Picture 1 (cartoon, helix red, strand yellow):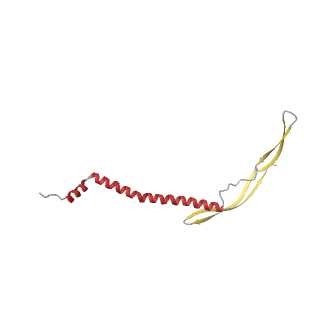
Picture 2 (cartoon, rainbow, N blue to C red):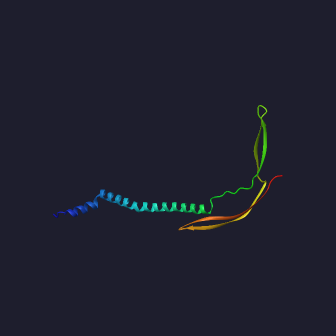
Length: 134
């Protein structure tokens, strides 16, 4: 009968051992998680850099703007009498919007670059015309 050497026995145990196979598979999974997290970190860093770049370009160019039509504000006085002879005057404001409002203009987009990132900014020329009730 042929006796197995120590190395042959160890080799046979490695080939047939489920515990060793599970341990090896788990170890390889843990090792391969390192590059996965490095790639995730790089993607996250690039996304943050993109938002920072857009904010930087926007701050130099001009932030978001909301355009509203004209509002006619008319101040008026109101007098009120208190319990006694004292008369109080208060100033209030009446606000009127136009019945008809026309906005004419054009908007032209421009692409701005900063490194590998790009963002769009807009230029516009607008003309407002409106009619208030008489």
